Length: 126
Image (cartoon, rainbow, N blue to C red; front, side, top):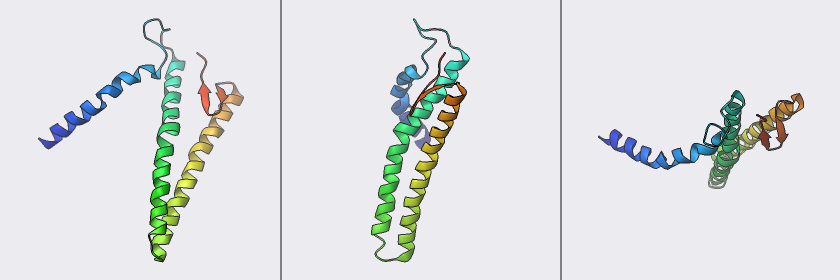
């Protein structure tokens, strides 16, 4: 019974988000052009930009805070200090990898003429 109740709650919680998904791909709607293969790539770009610029920064900030708390509340315990330092370094390395790879791939695709990049925004011409 609890699983059913949680499933219904989750569905009702996410139900309004279904309506907001309309602008992910600019095609197929009334007054819009029919969908083509390039619109699928635009969908991937829109999802990627949402993840990179709406999800990653708050998660990284929370991990920075968590690492700082672990670092400062270790009270001189070398294991706690090392754990806090590892968390902070992992966040920095992760951010460099995520945004560096996005920058590098978008610049390569721009040089090949596949997409138009005004970093951080990628535009796919359909």
